[in-house]
Length: 87
Image 1 (cartoon, rainbow, N blue to C red):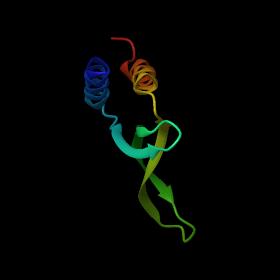
Image 2 (cartoon, rainbow, N blue to C red; image 1 turned 180 degrees about the horizontal axis):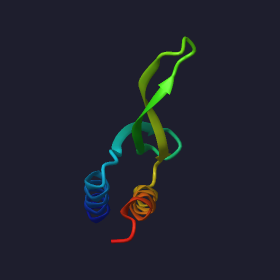
Image 3 (cartoon, one colour; image 1 turned 90 degrees about the vertical axis):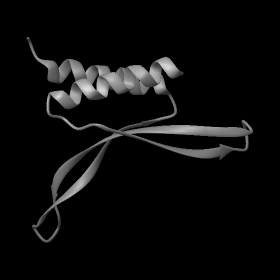
């Protein structure tokens, strides 16, 4: 688990250096079925969105919500491949 957290942070920093801000958040809930706390990971970024009145407003765009840290790392890796370009 600690290794995946480190990999996710490194990918997040690499993506940030390319100018795209990807935020990682977490929330927890208690599963009665599994009798344990479940951590949910959320990837999001800020976008400008036009509201009904025509004004623009910053809002969060949720990219992924999952209980799997491996899925978060895979998603960040896909984003990194898309933004890194050919160097």
